[in-house]
Length: 225
Figure 1 (tube, rainbow, N blue to C red):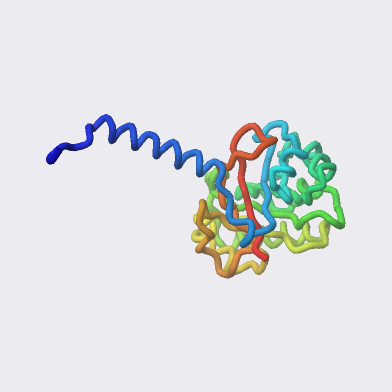
Figure 2 (cartoon, one colour; figure 1 turned 90 degrees about the vertical axis):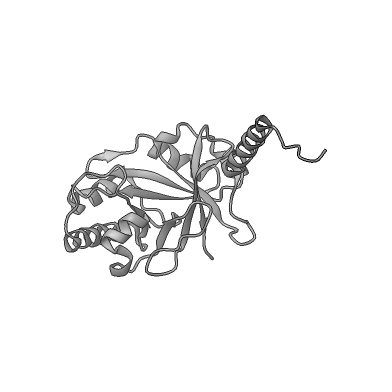
């Protein structure tokens, strides 16, 4: 009949159903494996006890495992996750959360003290982010000098170029990718990153993906080949 409109309750119900569907899709979405055949997770103790064989079976080819933060914090599950990823047949790498308030030499010593030197391990990663960092914002030349100290010490230990995991905010503020020529691991939820001074080698595509073997949401990454 002419002039009839859909009741507002039906509109609300439709919007709720659409929202639930989009939320479910976002939780289980991953970049196309044809375009990005190598995909994996990055984790820390905050992700709890992980069933690594199940994660591997769910499509994770590799794992980056948090090792240390600042000059005196080590991830309490690092050794467990490091051994378990290898046992599950997954390639693994370790990452360090950099603090703007601690000397780089002390931070590198912290990392080196717990991360084994393994020929087949993925390159070490250095996470640079304002979130969870201290409130200090040292001058750019100071930060660049400290980062280079950390990188030199860690690369002497691992024998491989360090990967820089950079947020857009951190790179915009300090222009790290312009000054330090190392592989970039950048973030972009659902869409490839559009920042950084050069092409990325790793893309953190989601921070909310649900993966069998991990109780909550997890960071999901792809490698550009």
